[in-house]
Length: 452
Image 1: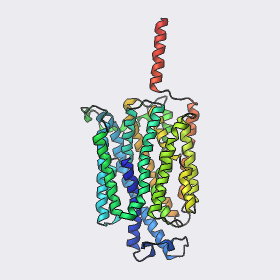
Image 2 (image 1 turned 30 degrees about the vertical axis):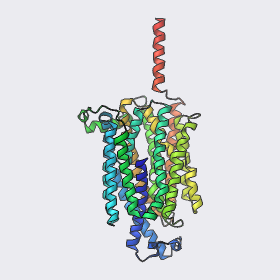
Image 3 (image 1 turned 90 degrees about the horizontal axis):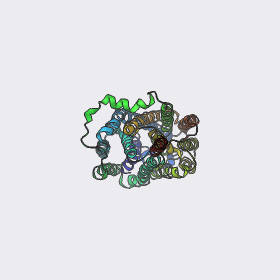
Image 4 (image 1 turned 60 degrees about the horizontal axis):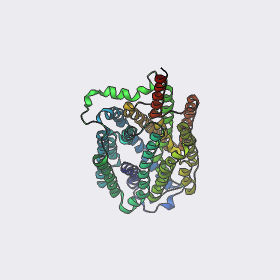
């Protein structure tokens, strides 16, 4: 919760600060740089303000492309390694490493904003964050930790979903307060909140999270190449489960693409005409969106499990995301835009459900490697989504701003398509929890022994 509070606040803060910085530096005498620019908020392409706003939007989108690359490429390497290391070296030690790097990244952002240094230097802060594995590297270790303390089946699905809901709560609170913090205290003090939240996540791990693995296990027992290989062997080794691994991870990839590239583009979309939202509105929307999808949506898992298997629940999530993106593409008023998170409240179920599906297929001693591989796929798909949406938005902002959301709806459709194939090939069977399988085997052996 602390980690996501700081991360969402940082994302909202950075995007808005970038737009503010560019407006005040590129067009210092424009009405866009004044505190009240509502008079300039129109879609009349012949006005000076329209061309200035479009120029700022394109430049901010270009910076977003650079940020997406820098936040993703180092994280790919880190995330592919730390999962295997956590299987042998312990989850908590790796979590301390990832969260400390996020804290240092936030501190660097504080300095850059305070000194009002060129926004391009914020990319250095992104690099520090990425070296630590970023969000997905950190979450991969959290999910592996959850797998260590749960049994396969509904319990693990629920606990993974609960972890998604808890980070969603942190993100929702961040959205609600971000606009107030930015408008009341300014960008610098908002960045201080980010640092404090990141530091709090470190303290929670150090002070309260019990280690599950012996501290004397040597890291030298596995090489870096072996750790990387272990993260992806599931999808290549000959096994009756291989097709399930492949279909699930491909579906996860398209689901990730349809969700992760939206946040920064949505903020630019909302700051642009015909909406021209303030920081408060942007924050409220983020809070509602996060609350609906990561708290309310995930809370539905327990209910849906009564009637549906995991892959069907994930299909519902994909359909929800597809409908939400389609509505967002054609929104012209605040009321319609605020309906988008309501329609898409199930969309993020794709993440916990497919993670749980893959986890139930995997032995206990390979959970860290599995989630590390998932994190790498998540980073790759997220990077592709961020780059793709940024390029599309930059090229279509003057003609059809909402086209980017139709592309995301198409990706959600492919997510549903591959889940349907998984469901059909799975033959409607459910995966028995390990303890149930063990019980059956034990009773069968006892029966055979008695008859013998």
